[in-house]
Length: 448
Image (cartoon, rainbow, N blue to C red):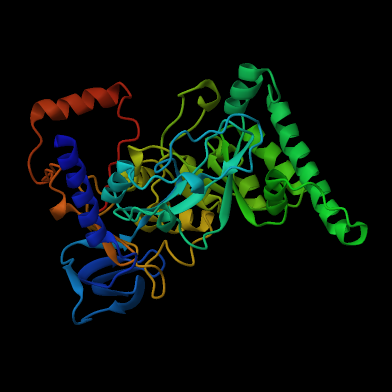
């Protein structure tokens, strides 16, 4: 009897969730906000009208009847944050059975119950790139997902018509998993290069046999792995490559040039600052950590100025999380570029909005506030680059998916910047800075 009651309670909760969040698009009017458009400047006391999940109007004095309305007076309104490197919504992300597993696909394993997705929404993240892991030289295909929390159908989490992407990896991870762990190639960095060349050569041969099949009548044996690799050669799939060292980054660009592939975003790319002009010339993108390094030997050498150096060299750069914790405050990670490199407010915010959208091939739909784009919006109390900034509402396709006022299971205390810091705490921070333990702390100095 007790078990039956528990099941009834669970069913009731699910039914209520579906009732509230079942719709995938909605209508909403945001009033009187300071709108950070990203591509068209900042608009004070401005309204945004979202109809059927799309931004239909931006201006002052907008009105609409029978529609949800949010008063954003005194708050900042910006595009939903995009995370170009995440593993939330999935589990057991490495198909580590072969150095090349291009046939597998993360999209078949999205888990809408993962609470990390809700916590990401609480941090203003509306889209993430759910990625295969880095155990393989050529891993599985990834999935760009919308954070439609409350929708229990995994199919609805996929961002429809988003370009296909795939995970590559350089360096220690595939070497350790395959060479050291299984005594199969690749054991060395040289071996990783040959995995790429061998795979692309096989895909070219497969394509050629298919092309000749019309005259010979002999189709090659179907291979989803080779079909996927052939699509990479044809520019139908964007490569996202786990990378750290500058020499390996140059190596892969040389391989791709030999095979006519030009769609790549280097992930992590900790030594990207060493080869920034080469990345720009190739047209490669870079998705970086703000200040993570030295957690293993091949990542020993990096700098918190990496994002700024790449940006100043005209490499389209984003800051990602690769973490269930960092995804909750990517706006803080972006703010660190003002401590290390002095990027402008807009340059810093581009790192978590339009730039990752470009890297995922979805910038025509998201990444800035513009009429016709998806109604993905986050509303902040306090400037998003301030340490006091806090997301209040996160809206996906015109539906409020996070509302801080309707979040009873969490206890949130607003920090008052006007309250004097106790002397003992101030001294403690000073002591830690002297020891180098405060590396990467955001100190957004602009007046907001």
